[in-house]
Amino acid sequence: MSRAVIHDAIMLFEYSTTAKGGRGPVGKWPGLIIKRLWALYKASEIGFVRQKSDSTRGSWDPGQPFINLQVNPHYINSLPENRRLPAISLVLVHEGVHAALDFLNDNSLYSELAARKVAVYYYRELSGPGVFNEASDPPAPGKRAELVLLPRNAFPEYVKMSGFLDKDQLIDYILHNPEYTDPHYLTPQWIVETLSLWGGLRNRWATSKGLYVKVLASSRDPHYESFILGVMESIDHQKGWDVMIEHAGSLRTIRIALSDLTSWHDHERIASLEKKWRVKLTEDPPYRCKPHSASPCSR
Image (cartoon, rainbow, N blue to C red; front, top):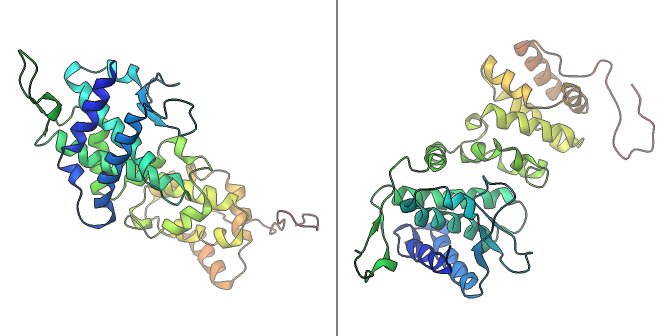
């Protein structure tokens, strides 16, 4: 695959309506992405490189000695020819977010959300009104200038993400991928900071709530453990509770974490949850073993 197609894929996004941005901080992202992509292109730091997994569409790794932004040729070649240019452009936009936007380097989940959000908006345009391919104007001999227009269901993953974005559940879709539940991504601090975002806990999938409980309980920090109750209290039906518990890890770890809570108010909340869901949520007798403690663990 030639270097010229990278040029055309960047240009396709640059002349899209999505790239013109909009109001607020998000509206400024496309301009930053385009600027970064052209800089990487001129430095020959964008290219086609086979990825470790065939399902990986692309990657951004500034630590690579040569090509930092990589597009998987195996993925591109698996597509019909008329879908390859927009597919390359979508990969460049996704990875371009990682390359261009600085989320204070505090957590990559913010970057993953942004990468998908911009790409979804772009996909909606590609599969809706379409995007004129400026690289085809003037057309080569025997060819016509073209409008790049994808069928609405051309790339099912983007269709799914578009639906979840409308529901404010894009974060749940991301966390459903085990790669993004790694401690590098999902930390107690990130969970606590984002509990009220994207529709709050009532809008989170039960699988996400289970992951939250698992990470918070494993922290063995009373500050984080105290938020477990709020997550559990947001469950309102048995199926949701069962799914949450299934993804929450060891029940004993949860019991130990909740046994660390000492206020009467917390005890009342725990008792209410135990009665509602007919489950034991604390150790009996209480388990007392703090990490890094000089005293031995005891019951």
